[in-house]
Amino acid sequence: MNYIIYNVLFMGPPGSGKTMLAKRIPTVLPLLEFDEALEVTKIYSVAGQLKPDTGLITERPFRSPHHTISDVGLIGGGQYPKPGEVSLGHRGVLFLDEMAEFKKHVLEVLRQPLEDGEVSISRAAVSLSYPADFMLVSALNPCPCGYRFDESHPCTCTPKQIQRYHARLSGPLLDRIDLQVEVPAVPYQDLRQESGSLDSKTMRGRIEATRELQRQRYEGLPCGSNSELFGRWLQRFCSLSEDEHDFMEQVVRKLGLSARAHTRVLRIARTIADLAGTESIGTGHLAEAINLRFMDRENTTAN
Image (tube, rainbow, N blue to C red; front, top):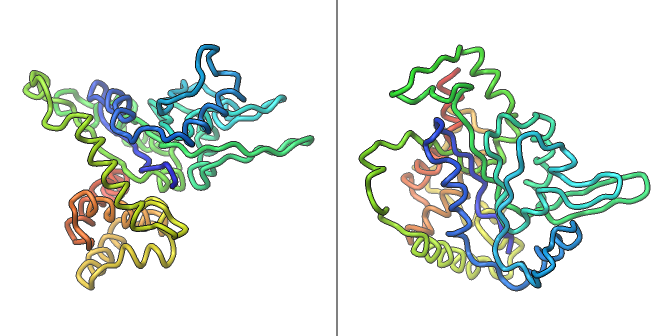
């Protein structure tokens, strides 16, 4: 089964908890299976990052490279090729904090591994492929100063500055990020609460149960999870009634969704329905999936 659940972008002002959310994601992901642990351990061994006292890596990797990283550092390669951060994050999380601060050409090299789950490196003497099946989690401020949507802080950015800031992320790259979630500033009343309503153990249990449902549903098929659905399998398992088709037609027209974004909305809606224990996808599931595409809605508002 393909590891990727969904790629996520958190957008919100400084201090809203984007980094904290990202660091908590590994705690709710399914535990590494034995064959996954072997893959991760081999990659770290080849990269020379396996600690001497470590026999087998048993926890999902969490990689958080600095925004000054080069494309070689991110994707791998060099004079003596070795895995980069996308491969060191294999079967785990690759976290890009302040995503817009990364060089644009560095971000663009993510497109191939996000699509294929591996990275190919060609040099004059050798061609190599490294596994790169990771969950991309990124954090982004809504504008250069960070306070565009924060009612408690005035935004000092001009529309042109905001446009240039967002232009650092290309449309094709954003299309490959399934969930684009707005993270508002946290009110004090929420900060004073001692605990939330759902702990990590309960979340992990729900995720594992849903992935097991998908494992059984797609047994013997070329796709192993909702995130891999394509072609006729997408049509079969994400079938919509006429009402849902009409709803999606209006959304695609209004938001100008690309074919790739449309596919990702259907996959997300399928997962939302699975989590709700519903066999068919309803308008509510589609609406929730679209609501998790913040950048699509933001771009429409800006236009």
